[in-house]
Length: 101
Picture (cartoon, rainbow, N blue to C red):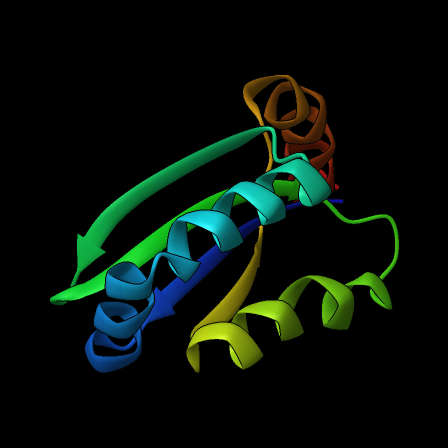
């Protein structure tokens, strides 16, 4: 299942990681390992935030993906199921049929 992973890094931990260079190394390693479909970086509510779109084959993959961010940055991590437009097109007829029946 495709998940949008929202990773929010507290300011103090993020500042330390940027200054010592560990954030850049960590991001490169994580992107290489997780191979997200897309990755975006921004500030949300004043905190460094990443949005990674990853394929999760089984819910048991969630600790493997999330724990790295908890341990590295004391980050908040959210797993949010998402779909692309093709998946939406596939799912809408089923939804409409369920409402009609």
